[in-house]
Image 1 (cartoon, rainbow, N blue to C red):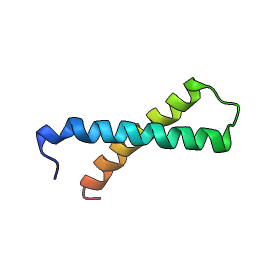
Image 2: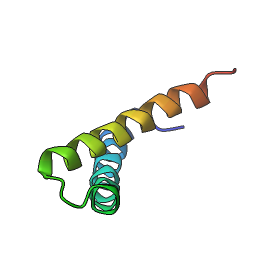
Image 3: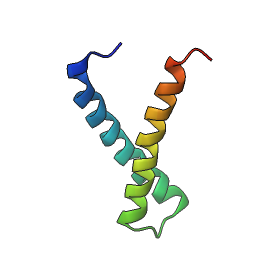
Image 4: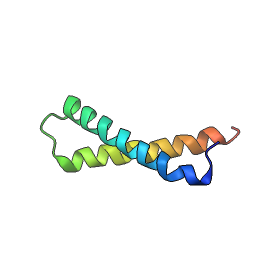
Amino acid sequence: MVKGNMRPLVLSIRIALGLIFGVLLSRVFFPASGVWLILLIAGLLVVFAYIFEVLRKKDL
């Protein structure tokens, strides 16, 4: 379980990994894409990470 003071670290790691994988995904699938598409993909990856964390913590 992540403590309260670890939240900014987790967020920064997720943002960094989202940007890295956003660049990789955009270059593979959309080679002529611009910065805005890379940022959109990175943002979606971070949002999905938090959504899946909430779903994982729930007892479904």
